Amino acid sequence: MATQAAAAAIAVSSAMDAAPLRSLATGHIETGTTSFMFLATALVQFMTPGLAFFYSGMVGSRSVVMVMYQSFVTMGIVFILWSLFVFSLTFGEPWLKINGYGFIARPDTYFMLKDVGIYGPLQRASTIVVNGFPGMLFMAYQGMFAVITPALISGAFVDRMRFGPYLIFITIWLLVVYAPLGYWNWGGGWMFQIGAWDFAGGMVVHEAAGFSSLGAMLALGRRAPVPPGRAKRHDSEPHSLPLVLLGTGMLWFGWFGFNGGSALTIGGLATIAFVNTQLAPSAGMMTWIMIDWLWAGTPTLLGACSGAVCGLVVITPSAGFVQPQMAMFAGVMGSILCYFTVQAVKSSKYLDDTCDTLGVHGVGGFLGTILVGVLADPYECSLTDTAPVWCANPGTVTRSWNQTYIQSVCAVVSAGYSATATYVLIKLLLQCRPALKTYAQQETAMDAISFGESAYKADVLEPGHHSSVQSDEDFSEVAELDKGL
Image 1 (cartoon, helix red, strand yellow):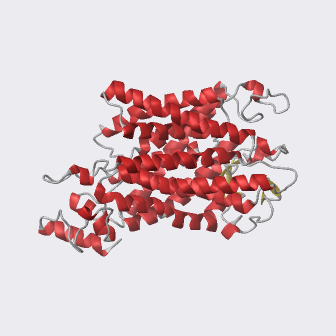
Image 2 (tube, helix red, strand yellow):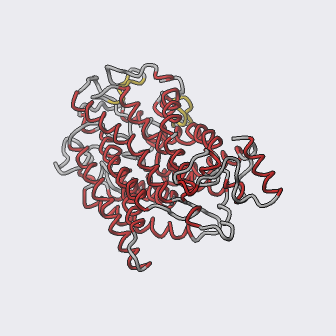
Image 3 (cartoon, one colour):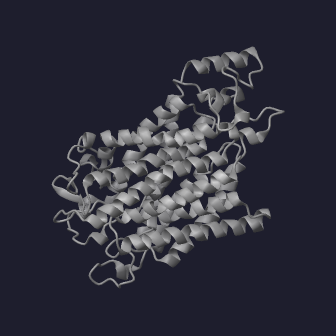
């Protein structure tokens, strides 16, 4: 995208969006914009603990610590990797080009935050990338997106990956999935070059996480059945709706920074993104409630939370490109599609999506990406100088059949690449660490055995005790697993 944007300097900061790189003629730091981006960065960071609460309520009581830990730990390991070289792989100068289209960025452009401005805006090859606030703050803001994305995947394979292999997985996944997708969309790579738009992460965050969860589920298989005599509520059913509701509220609150902050400046663009971030999940929540009521006979709180998150996901790619009424339409359509996808996955013999990551984030992000070409402002908003005052983001994307085609192609590629790369990655990891297939093996990925601690006293086990070990064969399997990660 930088190839096109750098050819025509953009002097009005309100025309910037989070996804593409914008080349500006001169650099300056604005206190208002800087303050706004500090707040937006903190809001996005707040979403990861929110995700930990959200997922923990959707799993059995004996997996709460593991699920929360898998989200929380990304705030450590992912941000360290981001600051070392993943930021450079996402926003650095082009390294590998094929027929003029960028595929891989240079890992040394901003290696260990080299040349990332503290008192000036971010620059790349003497071109100002983002104006109005320090480059270091832009790095931190984008880093919060990188932090939450692999955490989203963890909701799909509860009880099927131990903590050590999980750390290895997210480290490699950042390099082979997140960084390439981020560069293709936001760093000036081939998707931007052909005209794709992603305001705040429909492809880079939600499709990447959602369809990576599909690859992970196919590679790891389903959870083993709960043995006779054991209460399913401890192991495989949502155990705490209050935690789900708390997590939903935290995610929704943080999402205002996720989408609103993606304007990269305070003003009209941030305002429309903010309003759309309220309307789409509101519509999504009410739609899910009505479908639950009509289809299943009961409006559930879990369904209301799922519908709200679905609306947030669907509006993310277009939050700064559409009118409020279009945001509501996106929320309705997204909730309908996500609802029936979730039901289909739950009835599948091959997929076990514990926290509905594929159905909500994958499918919601996929639909939202395509809807950019359908719901964006009309052609009269394409020129900044002549655009009507009601246009959401004049001079950027407008709806058309051609734009819908471009968005669809990129949505399909993002989904296919994420699923395939993740499947191959996990299969390779399984060559070193065998999959957890039996219930006794999967129990070693639960809280008491993995960490020696539990969210609830009733689920605490004595050290070394495995409640499902019933034979010498089970004991040898578990003992062998306990030697490693």
